[in-house]
Length: 496
Image (cartoon, rainbow, N blue to C red):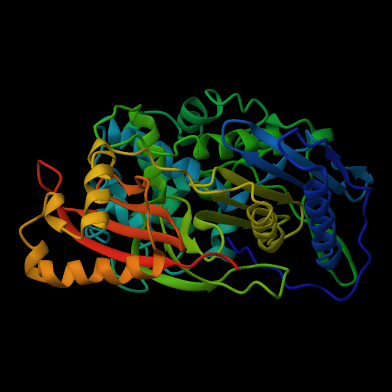
């Protein structure tokens, strides 16, 4: 499903005034207004009939939302909060998480051969594994234009297609190449393993527990007055795209939802962070959600999509479970996905360690609202609202605070438990000289250090000194008792 749309230079936007839900007390009104303005500007520039957007904060849900434009061009019906949109390939994360649930229950393994669950694949696809399909590494050719139109394909015809064999563009397991066919096969695996149509299994495990009552795979479930009908711009006028009924390819792109419903899904994803500290119990379902961000294959570089020319950033991206995963210059770890479809275009982005997410849903063919979605989260970060999660301090790191203070004040690294490599890598005399050099810059540091964790066995100790700050990076060894395997010092001069 394609997700990019170049701005068009012709045609007037048929639009209704934008409206937005009032921001919560935790979301600044001026920031909300700026995001709303960005959304409208993007829609105007890209001739999008209608759209809805939302900002989600972990633990609080939908903290800001807005709508703009027309849900139905012919009827001039405006988009409202309960307007339904097709979200296209943003469906894939629902499919992947349901598959991971079944794997966690022991009903399949992700390294199973696909033919073990889909007999029609035997013979031509014996090398395919389930995980190949999850990560788009099945060796199938990219199939956005073709795959989108297969949405209503009946089960019998899908079976016939598979029995006849599908050509590969390369051997399975080599590189990422996006495949809607692969996710349609995952839908068939869910059906065969669970004994239920994939739509019913996903609804049971995802929609109903989250209270997504307005979300469905079937257009027949949507009151006609609530559907954002799909449109494309062609020959200087809007053309209605045909509605597509549910079918076997719906597992790759068939979900229909509202902004408030989709916000519940984004909130569910964000709720899986932060992970419990090592040794502490947590619900297995949280770890299953986090597995969606476990990518596979070689990373691909992309430039961060943004309307702000002043914030370029190259992001190395791998494909997880229905989500692309990368590390952004501003936002840190991110997961995102677009959805392009005849009549629709959508985008979602989460910064899980910061606890924020954003999404945009539209009713224009292959509209790719990536830029305003990223811009929204970047604006939240720049406003200071989205710091990364503070990791809990482990007993191993907390117990090092006093020994580390003795190391700094005496110069004797023997005050801390040392791993076997520590003095082999740099002897005690040189380490004493390192400490003397940095204290000469910083002066006296009378109080015990603060500690910040980078993990249970990795952290930084920092002292406020007479002339600036001393920071020591400490890395513990994987030994039963805490032992330093690495220690590095740096001085941070006082701010002018």
